Image 1: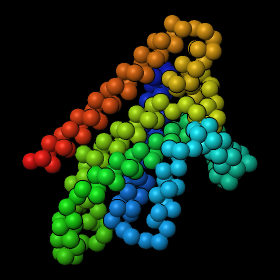
Image 2 (image 1 turned 45 degrees about the vertical axis):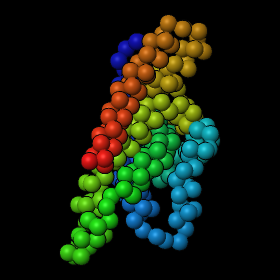
Image 3 (image 1 turned 90 degrees about the vertical axis):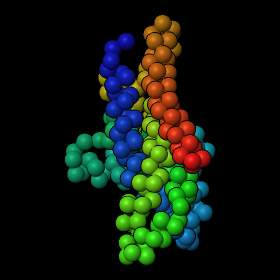
Image 4 (image 1 turned 90 degrees about the horizontal axis):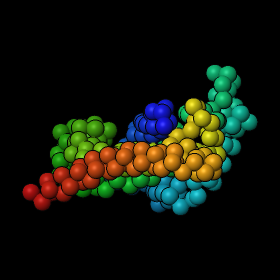
Length: 223
């Protein structure tokens, strides 16, 4: 197995995580620190990708990002290229599927921040966004990092939505899960096992770092 497929998998997962990061931070802070009408509906919509089959998500993205879809039409008119069946489409699919995991972890971390620090900053004249970026997020950074890593490892393993919206094109959109699927279809068990091993190594490394951050955060709370 060449390094091309693992590198593409990392590239897709990294872009998916970068897409999710600013949105997840804003949404998590909004849901934890603000009360507004429709908050319950917003939380349900954010969690929806966890309950909907990934294939259904991929089909929805195909309709949205395709050349005849609302986003795909604008993108093609502006840049003359299509989104679907590219590695960028694979990253978008991975971002949608992993988004709820990142938000949930960040919400837990932000909810555990002592509100007295935030109130003190407000009392000194800091605005809501300044409090968020100078108090809330820095104090919750371990949970935020844990959420990012959890989303990243989920993006590494994304299959269902990716194969619909990005296809399974060797050298262009074929990530490790898709390559494993292809090798199994071809009954090339040896190559499939090598790719399974590579997937496990990538996932284990990320999960070890994720669990280490969680344990460190728990020790700090005990102190």
